[in-house]
Length: 172
Image (spheres, rainbow, N blue to C red):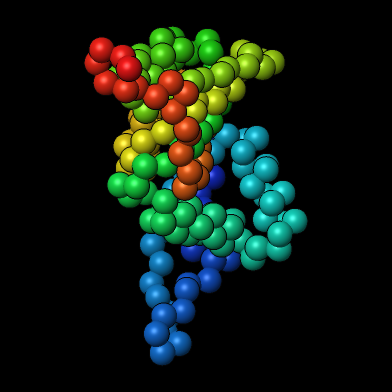
């Protein structure tokens, strides 16, 4: 957001501290979060539709769910998944940087598909397979590239069967 026009989400918007052991309330920390007007409107709509008491409660619920999912999914087990990226294709170098990352992780990147959307935006889906921790690193690196608006890694405990099994050197 430009010019320091930020909406602050914290204890003053109706957030209720979580209860800890023995019914005592856990202390909460205040953070500031900058969101686009569109995203803030969507958050406010969700708060109303789902009945959250406040924006803080909604964000805390979403964040908690994401952290739990993260703890369960990330590990050394080989998994298959997709990295879905939504980006501004006019951002300088974003397409080249994403392509370079796919080449850097050629052992894990199976394929990718991108669709040009309206308003100079692109949706890209990258099919990946490898150790979950490595796939998370790849996704985090792609999602945090300048010009990427949002992204998400979805993993499944499955494997892609080999298309052309190698039988060693010399054929056979």
